[in-house]
Image 1 (cartoon, helix red, strand yellow):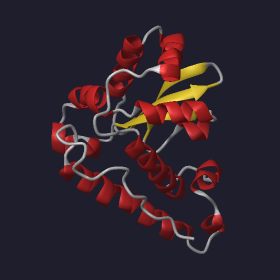
Image 2: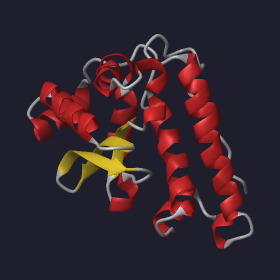
Image 3: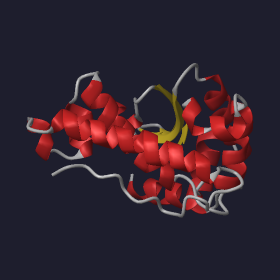
Image 4: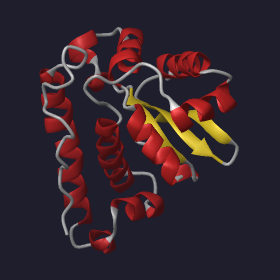
Length: 195
């Protein structure tokens, strides 16, 4: 069965003014769609054609199949990491877990910001759960926590196409805007509860 571009969990203009409809037109409608289309071409007629996205990611060697499967998964996950009216501070179990792992929610935000700002080139910054609690991961290109036995709770796409139309080269402003106005803490809480 062919992979399909999943619907966004909100309208393309729902994240404005923090993330524009134009950005989602390109990022979701062009970049994400291309990863899905390329993955379908790569797996058609192979053993991977009947595997789940996660099975392909875990079994694929570095290269085009892994890159397109992982980027399909990463982007699908990323869209749910944002919500209209999001941002601010989490509460409940997420807040408690952040305090246990980082000292405070503010300390987490600073550490996450530092990791997202300093990731050289293209990649992702993740809040993930590992054996020792919550941690922040930087991954290059298409890499993701799943490949390292960790559970993703949230991610921020720091490839330039994620923010260039709205923020040009000001990655720090994009990160701050995402944390304060877009991050979906309820989605993080649901991932934490399942981990």
